Length: 309
Image (cartoon, rainbow, N blue to C red; front, side, top):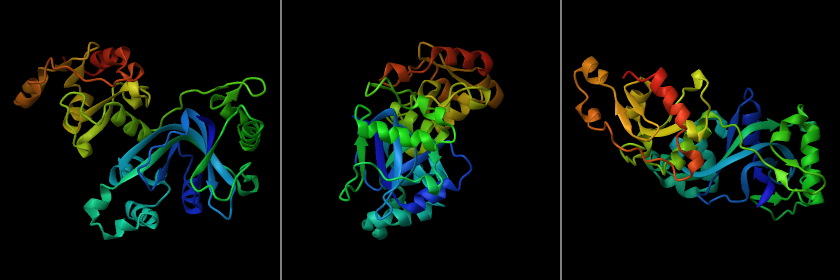
């Protein structure tokens, strides 16, 4: 597993993103549905332009890889996909996947692409672009580097020297003295990455009903972002859109022992809701990884501050 990965991209993607006002995340999307296993979350992911430029122009912190439908990828990241619209994304994708041209719009939107989610991106001024060390012209997609090598150490040093805030990368890759093991930390997620990572953590099923129709599933914050809640999987639940609305408005709750709680005020206020009251006491299916399970403190906060008991 590499500590730093240099991925190849085109100048149009880079220029579109550099023109945005300080994006907190970008999607380094790939035209194929192949998996990406070259880097652990928290590793440094760098952007290199296609031949003949062959220069590193920026980068960020790798958070997650997912294979996701094209239309939902656009919904999650919009212009942070490095294109100016869904139609533009389809056209650019068709350069690499010509079969897209023969598909109708519905089929195009469901087309699966790779999403490499990059947090805290940075973009160098053109005077600061530099060649990737040891790069061979036959490398098409990217190359990994280890911080246990002089080449990897030099690459990290060059990146740090070019950042306006050199300390920024101290939380990304901090090698111990000379070729020691790097210390990688969990990246801060943006909204789009939160959405996709919660979706994947819950195996693309509603935590309450098991619904699998992806367009109606939404990543709900347990503690709302506006109330100080973070974009973290443990502060999220994957819910069917109607249940998400009820959860946000305090008609639905999840207890720390992962049971559904439905407010009696749902029926009192709307003279209906039999379908939702039938869910009262139902179990909630959490993510497989313990670290991704709903934070009990967040669930307690939701009941105290939002739930209409």
